[in-house]
Image (cartoon, rainbow, N blue to C red):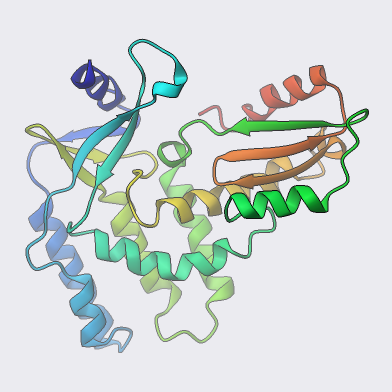
Length: 264
């Protein structure tokens, strides 16, 4: 059953593409080119460049965690890519260093359970007039569009980096490589992720949060949303917490409406 579920997930040609060979040597060459560019322009020290290059990179591998809480037989799998020691792991960590500060500025961002509890204590909630609702974004990490996410990152870096030694365009180059060349191995096959990013990647949560923030601002919290006056919305990555001032039927209609702009 485990292998069948892996094959089912990897058979999604919108998310994954089989490769003819191991892309590690090509990726190493691309990373080396960027490191040379970074040092020649004094954007990187030799120490940082050495951190970003894995001398003996490991090949990332794919596995799943069965979602036993779904109470389905067989249980669906949560796709994970272990990239520890891989070519792209240092790039993901380096980029995430810059993205984390942007994530913390998101108005609706919730850090952890304590943050949620403090939020609930701070709001006025009338059970006779309001509903407490949760929603879940389906497979957010693997569903975010790569090009659109990179555009979001580019705009945010340009607007917030200031006088950083490492310019936004170079950080974006590293992010582009880490996201668009995100590959792994399953059994004897090399596979490229062509949609979203993989759970297990260091910067995956930050990418998901920043893309979801744009979606919230342009769709959910925008004045054109016909349900805007009925919601107070806060979220933690892909779990959404709502205080809803309408009725249950309107809330269900809102959930359907949310899938309109981006059906995935």
